[in-house]
Length: 406
Ligand SMILES: Cc1cc2nc3c(=O)[nH]c(=O)nc-3n(C[C@H](O)[C@H](O)[C@H](O)COP(=O)(O)OP(=O)(O)OC[C@H]3O[C@@H](n4cnc5c(N)ncnc54)[C@H](O)[C@@H]3O)c2cc1C
Image (cartoon, rainbow, N blue to C red; front, side, top):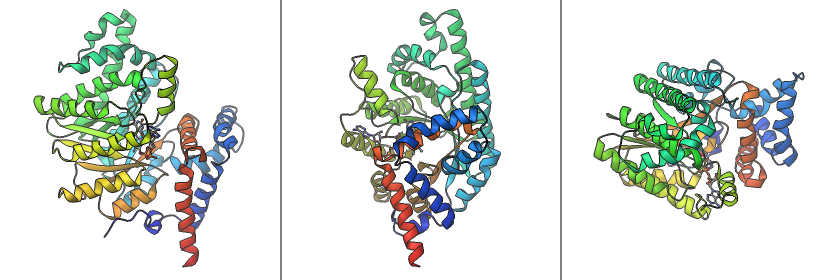
């Protein structure tokens, strides 16, 4: 079967007319800046004060488009629904709460529950977490310069390398944080579940890279279990990837990369401008696209590198399928996955899966109030300001038209 992303029949096969019309209404509403900017704030306020109906309004609209449920158990309907079309799930605990030790411990336990759920259900292909869900942002930032130095060497990471930077209290906190990080990686390795460490802002990313690499060295001896995320909107990432692949070859461990373009571009540029340092972001989208595609091409040629191509970009997804074919790599080679976010780019996910490629969707979940920041980002990303709304809305309109003409 030839791959065709414009096949909306496959993309929306299991969606009823009512469900599609509801999605159209939602994506249309993102054209109104007031809804995108004020909606999440108003919803947070109304939920805080227990306004009647607001919870069910949010849950029945934007939440149901982009989230699987409030708990792992509630996500099972979405997980089964996706699996029916051979699309796997990645449970993503998307709660952004207060930064304190008790919340961090709770999040750590919840992430380990997603690993347990994946072990029990082959419809869940990977686990994932954000380091800022289990470590204080300011601590990660403080560790960053030392982490950058650790990354320059092939030396194994030791928490005592950070000791000169930190007060005794901070040092204790750092030990606890790294223990949480390692507990999650250990649980994934013990369950044989591949784990993505999400990429975040550059001023904390060296620490995330250093901690992820330490766990790759420990757990990726026989295959890629721990995956680091590389953001190709950064101009230094191809070099970083090559360094890590070479290190893996020298020290005998496999590499897993989730390759994305990156989600914090404006924030990165703004900070670089205000603090007067060279922006880590590529000069333009073309450079970002070029490095994204180069990264895919580089990785698929190395049998010790596994990748997840995390994108809603049709061209990059198609290029990857073409290169796989040229290199004689089978569509469902375990080394290569495609991934999209729930509620977005179903035309890519479902058409790839129908052609037997490995595909997974991030399935975010958590209490409605706590996932509002995640939902606000989805609304912004899909607002007409960034042009995405055209893409999703057009697909929905095309499918409605196709159904009406049948
Ligand atoms: C499964 C999955 C996992 C993800 N995980 C992460 C993660 O861990 N960390 C993270 O940061 N993001 C993550 N993202 C988000 C991702 O980084 C992108 O923001 C989002 O997917 C949009 O990029 P695209 O490749 O889908 O599509 P496109 O629409 O082709 O690209 C848009 C992206 O291009 C880049 N870009 C746009 N304009 C410019 C410019 N002028 N100069 C340079 N670059 C530009 C930006 O990164 C922008 O988001 C993930 C996305 C998916 C689908």
